[in-house]
Length: 128
Image 1 (cartoon, helix red, strand yellow):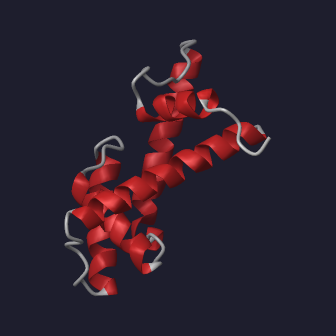
Image 2 (image 1 turned 180 degrees about the vertical axis):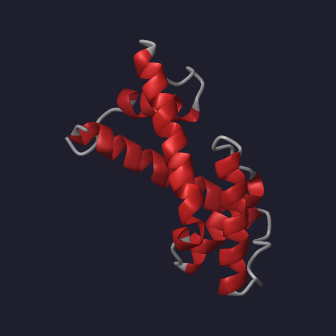
């Protein structure tokens, strides 16, 4: 992957995480009173739902991720190793089918990734 794409993806993810955390804080940080173990278990349950629903997340899972970030805790992937492996295998298989059919994976024009990348490319360079 070239350097621009790596930086763009990292910037997109960081931007999304900041927006997710700000939205969570604006809603009152409802998971603040959970213990670290409770938070980890609820995050794992949310990840399991995410992994079985073709990668579709929901606000509760986003909020759990935001609470982990705010506490400086890593996502407890150790609790969802099987689900993580199954999701990765499913995505890889779907990609291989698309490749075999001559289709290329892409995003709709209004997809947040595409909007972010368009804005990034269109923005004037700073510091020059």
